[in-house]
Length: 326
Length: 261
Image (cartoon, each protein chain N blue to C red):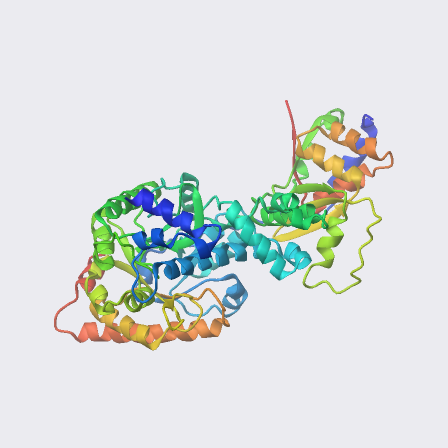
């Protein structure tokens, strides 16, 4: 049945006179860009949806917030609206879990494009990924799988990190992962492997002190040996989280407070590296925000102490020279 | 070599029966020590299945409520083995769940499950869909009335339309965690024409009339205003075209209009 013209006209008049529809103001202006230097010697927390309202209401004093990049890969909607709101208040760090840098599969271009779109939109202070693989042959397992630490893996990871940095047009950092097994093929210590990747790909290291401790216990090495092998200039961020001890093995659950042993290793690490932006990560059994803020405060105390020790030391630390040069 | 190692590792993770998985193959790949290679692999297997099952649970809470948690987990495990996750972005996982349920003989007594699960996936799609500015009425002002029939409206990118012979919107509604009213479902009704749409950040699921469904579906397939109206009147001669168009604009379901040259 064709639409009578008069009916359509009348209809449009009704709509046009209607003043019930408001235009949505687009106020998506982005705050000035933050850089790594801006968040230096500051402590942040991992931003998870159940804490959105509490953080917006309290606006706690934090150096930065870190999110999982993939949670904001959508085209629009609530996640991105929140992220832009947080971006108005804080420096942000994008922490990816799905790029699968260690996989023999080619880096997924679609994934990379979404990361670039997100980075262009929110101008994060840091972009990081994991030293791991997440799938192979097009099949993803969505878990952070460790690599065999070999010359072959090394060539492979360096070429993928280079590819990602070239595509994004900026430096990224890669994080050491916790692991529950070692491959028979591995013939390079993990600490030498990650430092070599940083040196040859020109990327930063996101040093997860909890993961170092977990791996030291699980694979029977001295955690300090790991820290000692890392060059101060390579580390762009430190992660702190809690693990669970099953009695047989330590599982990196991100579901408890940071352990005393890991706090001690953190202090040891900062004494060596100088102050580094540090993050409290909590992903399972999420407590109220206040618990994360208490942990962040604890990290801040250790960081201030490390900074004070550094200043009183007669020898200037290389990090200080860099900070002045920047 | 690395390609071979990675392929074998993933194959071990998804080996149909973990208990009889080839432990000698694990030994060749993984160091033992305090724990056997198979036990170490089992930690990863547990993590992978927990993550993917958790993702399905987040996506399909109504399906889980209907099936019950244990049966849901059981089917989720089968689904995970049968359906590779296509991306490192977990939000891309789970699209095939409705079809999996439809093909699964164990859920034959729940014929509406596929359509209810489709509604949940539509909700997920709407949640992440692109933004759109609201309808600008000024665009209509410049169109001469004799050309109104050829107008083409645009729906919000989040809009999804699902027709089902079952009352899926009602089933979805009574299975919401905050739902407190009468839970009885009238199975005599002819089914639902569901409209899923996001207005600002709120996702709405409505049961709409058949005529309104045909109207919006025609617009979604880029039909002219005249053709879309015809489709609706074909189903219901008393279709309230004016009211439906106005409501669709006010609720941000229709967001734009253009006049093809």
